Length: 117
Figure 1: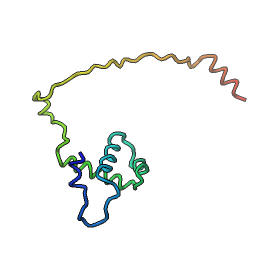
Figure 2: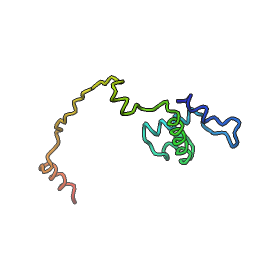
Figure 3: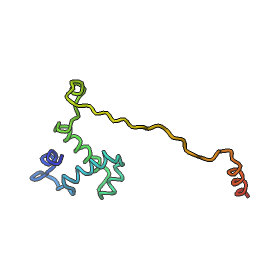
Figure 4: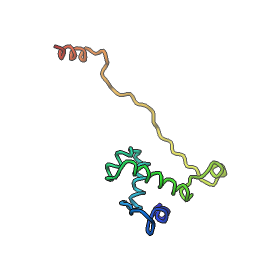
């Protein structure tokens, strides 16, 4: 991903100020947003930059990676043609009862009455 981003994000010889963050940092910010789905506000506080800057970084990185085409998922046609070997994993997620006190239990009602003045 860094190799795809470097030619697009490096500003050598261009007008304007140089960015505070490196290309790797830009990628880390975008990955942090995608993985943890934290708000731009929280990411901006972590990195010490403005919230709108985080938004611009994430959108710019997204657009560059999409435009490159190197990280595309296979389409429906490719999946249906059998080019990929499917592996199935079965996970047992049945519910198990949890022991909890009854809501109308005398202990709970008595405790409430004792606390009330």
